[in-house]
Length: 113
Image 1 (tube, helix red, strand yellow):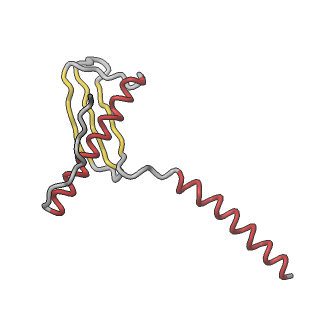
Image 2 (image 1 turned 90 degrees about the vertical axis):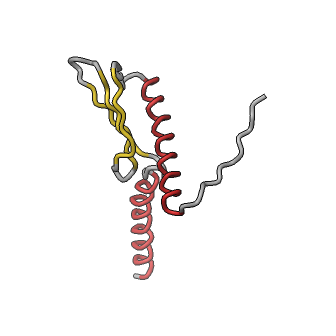
Image 3 (image 1 turned 60 degrees about the horizontal axis):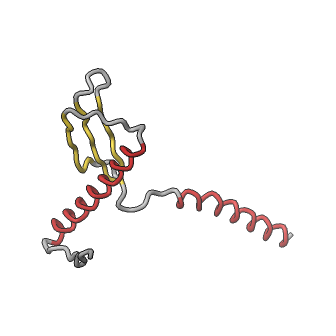
C-alpha cells in the first residue's frame, strides 16, 4: 500500500514537472517586445512601424514615407528586431531615469584600433 502511494506521488510529480517546465522555458526574455508593420498594399506609399514592450504597451511608432517594408525578407526582419532591441533599451533607460531622477552609469566605450 505504501509503495503504491509513493509510486503515485512520484509519477504525479514527474508529470507535473513536465507540464510546468516547458511553460517556463517558453517565457519571453526580459527586455524584449514585438513590432507591428502597417502598410497599405494598394498604394505602397508608406509604412507605419510600431514597437511594443512585453506588456503590450506602445513604446515607439514611426511613419516611413515612401517606404514599403516587406516583412517576408529576412534582412527586413533582422533590421526590425535590432531596432526593437534599441528601442526597448532606450525605454528601460528612460524609465530608470524617471523613477530615480539619477543618471544611469554606462560602461566606458572602447575605441577600436
